[in-house]
Amino acid sequence: MKFSQTLHDIIMIKLIDIDKFVQSRFKKTFILKGIDLEIAEGEFVTIMGPSGAGKSTLLNIIGLLDPPSAGEYYLLDQPVHKLKERQRSDLQKHTIGYVFQAYHLIDELTVYENIETPLLYQNMPGKQRKARVAELLDRFQMVAKKDLFPEQLSGGQQQLVGVARAIAGKPRLLLADEPTGNLHSEQGKEVMELFKQLNKEGMTIIQVTHSEENAQYGERIIRIVDGAIEKDERIVKEKEQEA
Ligand SMILES: Nc1ncnc2c1ncn2[C@@H]1O[C@H](COP(=O)(O)OP(=O)(O)O)[C@@H](O)[C@H]1O
Ligand SMILES: [Mg+2]
Image 1 (tube, rainbow, N blue to C red):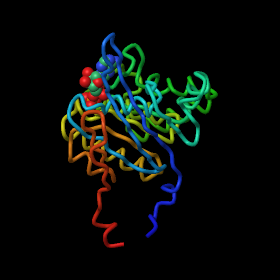
Image 2 (image 1 turned 120 degrees about the vertical axis):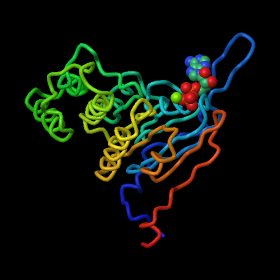
Image 3 (image 1 turned 135 degrees about the vertical axis):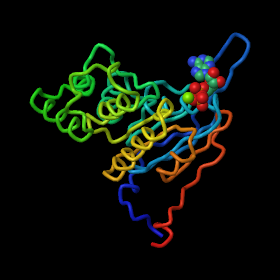
Image 4 (image 1 turned 180 degrees about the vertical axis):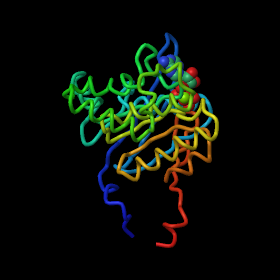
C-alpha cells in the first residue's frame, strides 16, 4: 500500500547512530545513545517521553543548534556532520523555523519587528519583507497589535507571534519544543490547530510535548526514554482506516 501524501516520498531527516554525551574526567555520560531515525518531508511528528529523557537534545541536534558527539546526520541529503559552519548556518536559516516553550521573543522589538527578524537574516529585500510580515499579521489576526511589545501581550498571543516569526521565512521544517507548555488549554489548542493547518500546507513539523492530546494532532509518536527511542508508532486516524 502506498501513502497518499506524495511529500512523504522525500526523506527530509536521516539520523544514523547518533550519540550525544558529556565527558568528565572520569566518565562519559550519554544523553542520547544510538539514535536511528528517518523523517519524511510532510510528516507531523511528536516526540514524547519523561523529563530528562533527551527530547530537547534530540530536537536541538535536528535543528542544527547543537552538534551530536557521534553519528551521521543528513538533512535534505546534505551531510550536516560534514558541513562547514557557514554552510550549516545557511541551511538552518533557509530550512528551519523554531518555536520555543518560553516564546523567546525579543523584548525590545515590536510584534512587527519580531516577525521581521528572520527575514532580515535571510537578506530578503525590504518590499518583499513588508509584504510577508503584513501577510502574517493578517493571517494571525495581529494587525492591530503590530506595534505592541511582547510584554503587552498575553502568553497565547506571544506564542502566536512566536509561530508567525518561525514560519516567516517559509521554512520546510518547523521544530517546536513544548510550544504549549506555558499556555492555557484554549490557547494551546489554537497553536495546535495552526500547526495542523501548516502541516496540511506541506510543512514538516516535529514537536515535543507532554500532552497526549496535542500528540493526536500529528500522525506519528516517537517515545524517548533514557536517551534512546523506545517506541516509534504511527497514529492511525479513522479517515485513513476507511481509505
Ligand atoms: N550540556 C549538558 N551537559 C550535561 N548534561 C546535559 C546537557 N544538556 C542536557 N543534559 C542532560 O541530559 C539529559 C537530557 O536533557 P534534555 O534533552 O533537556 O531532556 P528533556 O528535554 O527530555 O527533558 C538531562 O539529564 C540533562 O540534565
Ligand atoms: Mg526538554
